[in-house]
Each structure stands twice: as C-alpha cells, then as structure tokens.
Amino acid sequence: MHDSDRSGTDSLTSRRLIRPSISEVADRTSLRSGGHRKQAPPEQTNAESYYFIKQMQNKTPMVVMLVDGTELHGWIEWYDKDCIKLNRTEGPNLMLYKHSIRYMFKEEERRQRRRRARE
Image (cartoon, rainbow, N blue to C red):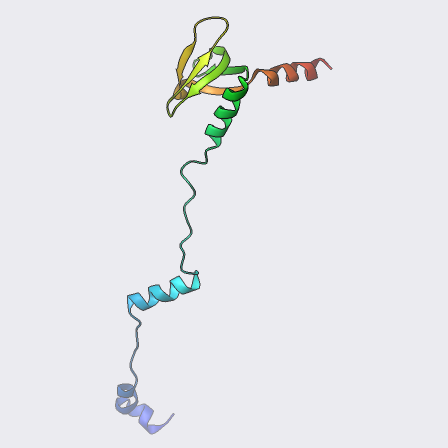
C-alpha cells in the first residue's frame, strides 16, 4: 500500500460511486431481451369454437353428460358463449348452459369402444 492510500483523503475523494439511473437500467434490460416482453398466452385459443363448428356442420350425433348425471343424445344446432342448443330426435330440443355440462363426446366413439370390448 502507498502512503497516499493510508491517509485516505486523497484517494477516497477522487473515487466516486457511479450509479446508473433507473431509465438506463431499463434501457439495458430491454436491449438484452430484444426490446420485447414475453407475451401472455391468448385468453382464448378458439379450439372450442372450432370443435363446435365442425360438429354443427356435420350434424354429428353427440352424447352430452350433465353435471347431475343425465345423459342426453342429439346434435348441436348452435352455440354461444354460455349455451348450446341440442336438437334431439327423441324428445324436445334443448338449450343447455355450458356450466351444466360435465362432458360431451361423439356417439360414434361409444360404438367404437363397445366393438373393441366385444373383440
């Protein structure tokens, strides 16, 4: 160590702490990340719309299981954000709230499972 370092007055006064401003730090981080924030995933993927439209166009026979255990058969005529309209050959057509549906599937899938079980 030098004598000037021990005295502390000369060497400490010439040293200054340099802090970057917040805007400089933000600029640096945005440059590192390419200037773009990672986007949140879309709120809707439109998978539900695609599924319903495909089933409506084909008038696919569907099985709809309700939350209370009721099983309904028919085809989807239309849908919106909250409801689907299920047309039936046996019984009246129904408008069902989506929150009352446990799950639904194509009636053809049930037939295929039964065939596989017999074989």
